[in-house]
Image (cartoon, rainbow, N blue to C red; front, side, top):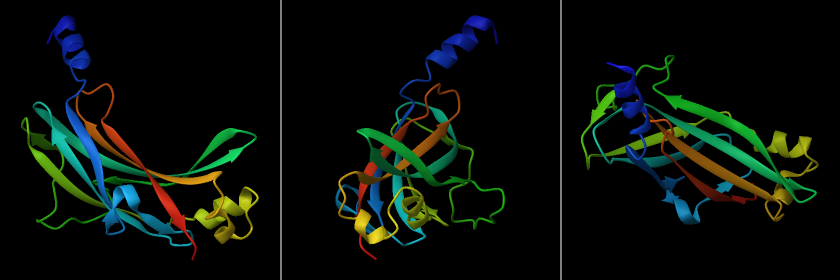
Length: 166
């Protein structure tokens, strides 16, 4: 493949797929709540192929934003990725890499473990994590990313999840 073919493939990788987060903790993502001291966050993402592409992996990030002096400070609480090289997957699980056809839809459940929001809050001036659930300066954001081969910008989706008292 020549230089111009490679450049065309790279630059043409935009809009290869779209991502939506549909479920958080068995609730609709738009209205989901998450207890501030829970350590496991689960959900479902939906990947829709816009054109032929190869799904290499899916990634999940849990961010806690704490506003200080009118500046949103992001704190990465935890990130996970599928396929995880340390996990054995059953035959019923999606195997990656996965070739997708235009219009094909993949529903991918996910789970992020060892989430320590209380620890992040304590380091940022909230010794009682329950107090942060009522503070408008604190917000929890979940981001799901589809790692698509040849895409310069991997498609992703974010949703803000309301923190609930423990």
